[in-house]
View 1 (cartoon, rainbow, N blue to C red):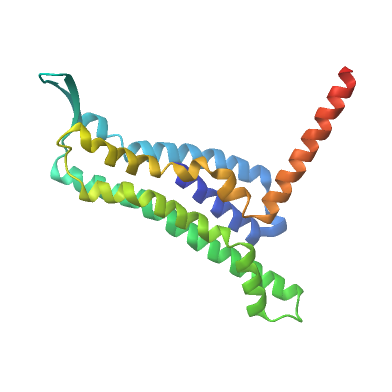
View 2: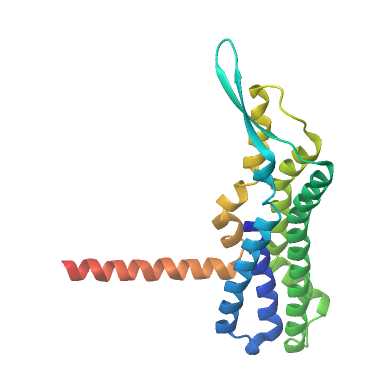
Length: 215
């Protein structure tokens, strides 16, 4: 879900550049609410089968009692599950890259119309340098999510609890990037860094005024 939301942000960024002054924030907020609901329903519908094919088994050993969660999919459902996992993995990545390419090319054309004395290739290089974080973010998303996808296709059933660390590591690696939103999305962008700095300054001013008022 978080990858799809990042993709929606990338698409809106492109729409903002294309429409320019014709972009309406109010309409954008309404569309964002509708799209969020659609994404939630879509994500649930593509994974809702999973709980119905899982069941628990109690295993009594000499030393301890273990509870295993077993998943048994029919062959057709297993194929569907693999396809949907791959789709949720690759589709946001491809859309993010396409959105970044469209944004940079569109931005470069707009700048070339204003800065007629400069070469288009030079402007394009400048725009790529400025918006390089739009490429690095989806690549990082794919690299961090790749272990989970590899485990999905390569691994088999766990033979003991000692193998659980492999599954857990592959699963939690994909959550590293959402936990580093500030580092990945804010710091690489000059605009977001400036907005963050302004927010901190405004917060400090408001806090100082409040403290002076209390004193």
